[in-house]
Image (tube, rainbow, N blue to C red; front, side, top):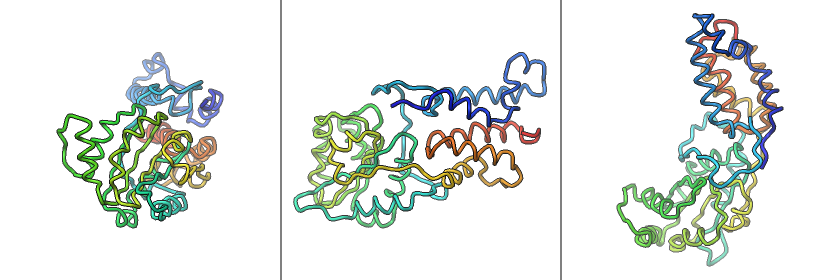
Length: 309
């Protein structure tokens, strides 16, 4: 899937304060001793952003291979005051989780599908931590799968999550036996976050212990691929996540960029932020948050605000 081309990156750079770019050369930094520490800090931050350029859409990607990059690890924790515009999505997913399935179906899959950066993981977190969902299920577990599908690691993580104890079993079959026993007769909720693997045999092997769960058990899978959702049976409870509107994107951006500062005291930065939000097109987790850090937090930390940034 191709990311936005470099033309979009140059347009975004037009909204970056010139003080953050016009003197960005080693020669000019040496001529201005006062600016040297600030330039070093900006350089450090730019290097960090450069390492994430594939996630920012600043580089055209012709194709994404299975092991093209290392994905960040996710957890089930979410800070709700920083989440906007997902109340309706959350209600739909919870309704799917609480819905009665046909007789004989112990475990069913709910799939959340969208492009990277749309907020799939955030939505899954909101549902996972919901009080109604927590009350409905006897056991809960969260696993970040990511690019490399390791059935033994995933199974062991699930087991340790629901038992709250480290597990020293060395054989995959023994770990699966223990997990089957833990699930037996209990209604569980399992989140498999960021799943890429489209190999049906791998999935069939992983889910063997799940069938011992009580009817009504659910698995939430977040993925970019509709093929993954279909393979796992998530096409029956399929939810394609849509972009946030500009206003909700702005609320997210404002929280990350300004935190507890008074936005009215910096109208120029607010104007720049609004333009960036429009160009991010509803991508909230990756591009929007990183642009907020890149442009605004860089200014706060290096005191550029005091110099008219």
